[in-house]
Image 1 (tube, rainbow, N blue to C red):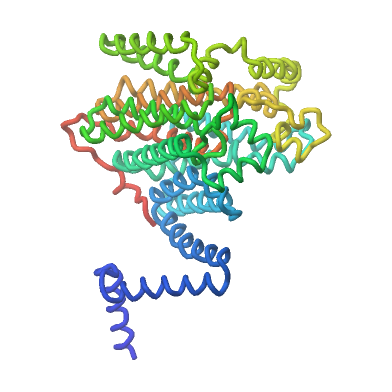
Image 2 (cartoon, helix red, strand yellow; image 1 turned 120 degrees about the vertical axis):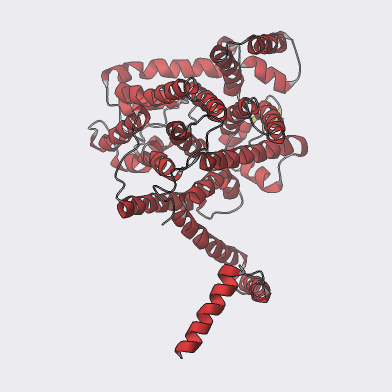
Length: 497
């Protein structure tokens, strides 16, 4: 009996681990599994069959994410990009699965911390301000002005709990190669989103996207403007899509000036151009203002003759396009971004801000999380701020968390930007230097975009931003001279269980 068991163990080890199912057994398993799933869908129905297939795929993915945090971060990023796209085709709670994966990874990190007795927190001002923000939002449950505790429970996740991914990412990145791999995944996903946005522009929406568009009158009014259909790609709205394309394209162009392989630089330039074009078709006016601002900041941080000439030429061309009269709705949308005094929506936003300013000034802790917008209409419909169209992350923070919360929230952007610029001028490795410049630009763009829009609390920005903050803090740890070997810290603190 023992000999038989030993033989079976030896066979399993050889078939699965050594040969990795690249054998007859693997072919039989593949064909048998496909046949089994086909029968399952015929017998149980398409929805149940697809759900079971998702279960068969999802469970191994979650196990791998628990075992390897770097893989888990990549999976979370992919889901963050595709969660709204998938929701147009199925009612399966992909967002809930994303939350479950996130908490599973955080649990896995805590297991590693306990196993290796590595209780040290990441140090620095970025970590401090994030901890202050998380603690402040948790204490908001005690806010006496809040009309609903249930609203706090629903909104604290996106404002505070999700920021724990910063600590997971900081722990997961053990080498410069780990960071490069994550950035590659981000850039590839951004290029896919850009290409799909161009597909929507040139070939139109598919049938499910048309149905999704007509489901909600507000959604239709947002997307159909100036007699054209704006593109939203994989995301929930054109504004989120345009913002991702703005900082994604800027990041690609900046990396393309770095010391990378020629083929990589070509891909970065082409990807950046695709993102800029998709951003234009998205029709969100905020990114049109952010790009010139980021270009000016880039020139300020790179005071060289070549950069000043290029920025000057682009500025003249951009000014000419803005001043030129046109009947093209895409160009007209871009031109309108630089004429806020003539835009009715801007005036409405300014009037709304004037209405809440006295309340903000007299309530340093705010009205409580979830008291404005959709959550306010759901949980406290009788409260005077319920349904208030804040239209801005900063206005929302000022109303819901008070001017004190607004200061803390804005400090996250400022400190992250300051740290990025600080190390940009001090690191020696040219690849790390150019990455810090790109991260500074992303932080600047998201910080600026948070005034006219609410961007960081929405997917995929909420995942991207806080992982990038971990990269801002972690990159300097791998800084070496180009001639020196890069030493990984993976051997000191294992990434796997």
